[in-house]
Image 1: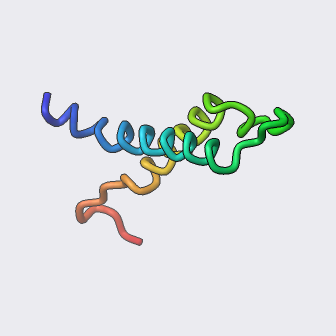
Image 2 (image 1 turned 90 degrees about the horizontal axis):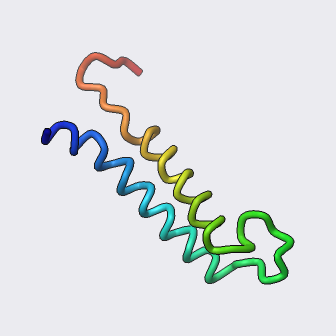
Length: 70
């Protein structure tokens, strides 16, 4: 059970961090006119940046313990 939680902890934290960054981006540089697809609403910004955070967790979360050569 502990291994299962540890496996999903990194993507969950990166997704949450991305969503919070999206909310901050909306607050600081949002598009009030509604012409921007991503920054016109806080939900769109949070979903988009959360997805980017999830993707980033996959890139940074590659665990190679001696079997990967780069």
